[in-house]
Length: 339
Image (cartoon, rainbow, N blue to C red; front, side, top):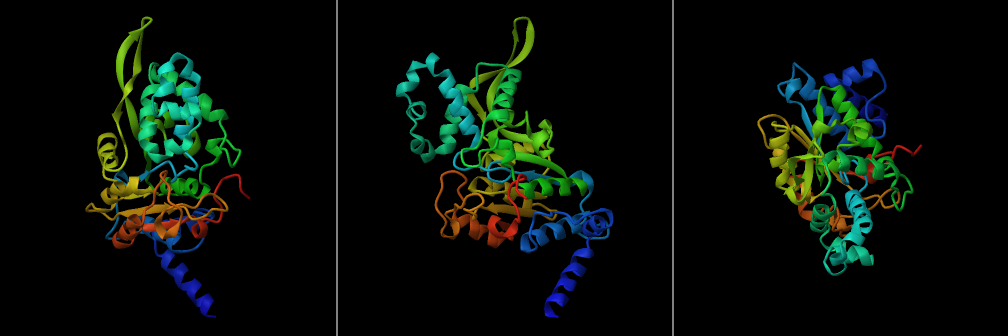
């Protein structure tokens, strides 16, 4: 009897929101791969109040901006950032033309298969490798190279192409937000031109709505054709404090919802939840070694240089009211291929 009464109270609270009423009226309940619990409730209640015109927290459609990190938030990032895997393959392909790489780090580590050395400072290694291997071609040529690779490269553990290692609950959340009038953006430390060729197909996020790190480029005429050439130097790093800067430059509006998974996303969540409008900050907490991976070091989980989630971030989330989405408990399934 107590359980029945508690369920009735929860349903009554949720049905008070316009978003929930609309979902009930038009089809199945939203977020089917999200287990009932604090994370799902927080999302539904937030969307409900910002979409309800009678609510003091109502936010007009034009201001409903949601930003998502990519690595570890929308798809798997262990045991190595996907773009780093792509870059390593590029080093091996280009190595015959660069004999100096045999004695220069981080290229030496790649050619010798010393992946532990790369993980010591994975993001810096990635930036240096990107600067050297993603240049010397037009933007169109690079997009084709990235598209060809992403179509066939497979994750070493799951034996599926990387675009099938995206998180089903997040795909549902992206769609739910868009159906509620939100415009969804990726704001990632990954390369903007690495992501743009496939994000619309995989996430429903079009290229203009992708914000990321970039290499320097220049316009020139090549064989009588106007092109944008990629240069061997970093233009912008969209990580940590760079994320609000990238949001301001590319989007021009402060988001009201931001979803990340690591210390690299802290400033983005601060920015999204520190404005004059209601804001919701969320963090994926990878605590499911059986279905995906478990790493922190928050909560005593293994430390990781890739997607680091320190205890200080967990403490800040509690202080600021950010929602920590523990994968093990919050998601009934992880990947789309699961049944």
